[in-house]
Length: 246
Length: 289
Image 1 (cartoon, one colour):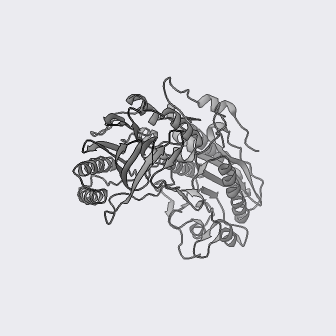
Image 2: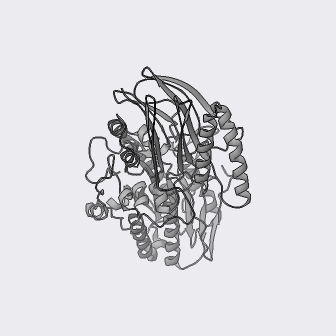
Image 3: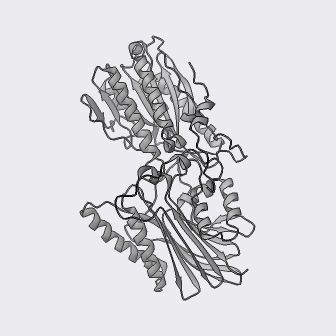
């Protein structure tokens, strides 16, 4: 939420555009041996954005970790003005629902703070990284009630994000498919390879490509969300969401 | 571990504004750190187009500047403008903003701006001119699409205006989000045509209506405004203008009277963080008052 160095002139950030991206990382016990690779990937993403001023001027990134609980490790920030946090595992379980609740809490709070400073905000995009099946039973109900919006009844989260799940190892494709949202924009990535370093590199490449493509979108001449092309890596499935479950 | 602010990283990557460059507020990093890139592979419009003109009681400055986004992507400017006259008393101005999702929208913007101006100069009323230009664009777009030469679409704002006894009198027509603004003598900006808010469910949306349209129709209005100056522009200028008092105040100051043509072009390309679109503005000022 920077106004940039040396430009506090009373007008603030009025009219500047921001694309919020949330990276939600599974730090449950099963991720223990993956943490170095995950942190390397996060740092690579940071460097890539800082090296691309067009993206850096527009994209704001937040990092949320989850296992038994979820918490925001880094609030929405411009990458050239923040260091990325170091992710650590707490050995907990894979509670999807608490991750969804934390994201649902953060989005309207961040949006209100940005709007109060005069920013124009694009709809957020959330990347959900997990290696396992959910250990909470009501994860899908929580997802539906906290992060989706039903236009026909005007119920749910009006400020819903575009939600893009990345699952590997024990994550199930059927569950990922239910999390890709909305139908017109959401996609899921299911990665079957066991080389976690490669997986995390791929995930970060997809995130970076999406951020770059969004920050430099040729779709409208302005920043907007577009998906990166599907990666052509063996063992990776890129799919569209279910359109009949809600 | 929570993230710590890192002031050094911002200082390390910030690029100072080159001398003589216009900026409004925080210019961001991209405006000064984006390389020029190679010449575009195909013949294309220059990065910057500028023009000036005068008619009895009227002075005009026009400029179109390639956006940072296109510069970063090594793609061409997709905005265009044309100037004309009608009967020696009316200025004819058209500004077009090519839709970036289609890679030959630069051609659409150039074609539509030229055809609308030609048609207006021949006496066609704006609704008829838009219908004709739209039909021609439909044909060209379909032909190019079939030849896999790329798709095209554009917005357009067109006006014919004269000045009598301090009053601006004219007609404007448009498709999409390129508006006409009035700058009063006391520095207040007011839209003459629609200025879409660009928000959907609380978030910014860049969806836009563009030519070719299914039916060739356009929005249309006549206006009769006292004093000040008129500005037809693409949303690359209009969005920061509509969203920021700082931009309104600064542009009102810069454009209280007609700048030198090259200065006007440099001002149209002002640096402002996150505003990376092509920029086009045509200013119409009174002359001799």
